[in-house]
Length: 88
Image: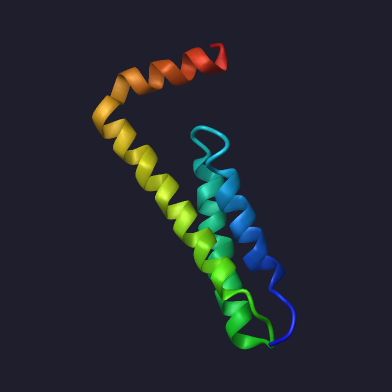
């Protein structure tokens, strides 16, 4: 195998970053999208990095599921706390 896929590495980095910012849904979606692109790139070219791509996809999906569960169980209380933390 050759070099690592930069898109796959980006997917992992964005997947980690979505957990650092509350309600970073756009980052989670970007991690999933970059992960799929990284899998295609690693599969079609002489690049490695499928593990990074899978990790980015898993982290993005885990974040979306976590936020959905929090909203289901805590609903309005969760949103009020977010607004309080944001200073609104």
